[in-house]
Length: 122
Length: 292
Image (cartoon, rainbow over all chains, first blue to last red; front, top):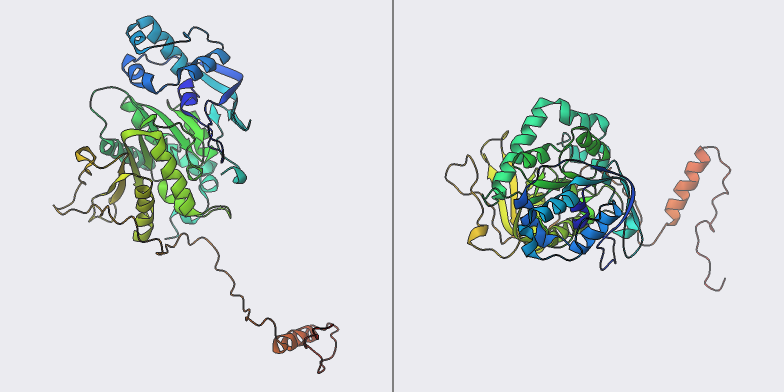
């Protein structure tokens, strides 16, 4: 699972008002090369919750991202490369996602988070 | 009708390892899936500017439809309820991210982040009640509601589906409309029984010129897209949800309860079996007095 997906996921357990961002529990992560596409990054940038991305990237051991961003930084090739690496190339293989309100663990195995809810959580 | 997979078992059971294997080994299935997803992407009508979008593949299975999305250069997130199908997708090394998730529980996504959604042959599964806690209407509502929230304004969602009956199609469409979607059904090749394919094309946001329903393939000039105003007022209308349930035994319970005749019959049955039963007297099956 890439951090792009992590940035989109939000806990949908019944009664949880703000299920974002999900906490990360990393047991194993991998890096995979992905083609660099600045158009996609520019399109995605307004939709990304930056703080959550920075925190998640740090948990995965990547601390190159700046804490504060503005859209003018998208002109910089260097920034785009870092953004690209954090967003698309870091994969969580084994670990868990944790709901920020209830602390419920969503296990991640082989890169697939198990988002199935129990009957009483629907 | 029994050949419909929906009527055989719940999706997470039906798509077991051997069934999932078919989705890589059978070239026929692969070809059909690829065609369906290509048409779905066409109906999605994303702006033709070469910018990759973030799309959602609902019921992605082994990732055949996702591969089509990757071919167009888009990033995608796929979700499916069957672990076996997702395992096959992992083997195929699909480019999108996969989630093990039940669409009837609502999508666990943030608001307004997805640029479009496709779904190939999956939505009709929502009309089944596979567990005692399942209510198809609530599941449809949760699904369309959460999808509407997660889509960006003006984004489209295209569902290829095989509704069991007209009523089922109306049920699905009705819940989509109630969630706030605009759109309708596009039927490709409506006159052919084999290549007839239905696509539910939905747009997030109020109807406008840009949300006009695309025309179907292979129809002879006549319009066959559904009326969009049939969403309300049919709540009393019952829809057969599944044939998979066993018929219930009819219980003969009269309002008054079990009477003397019933009791004598039961005692007789027990006597015939050779059990020791108290003799029938005038007190048999008589009510106790209230002061007792």
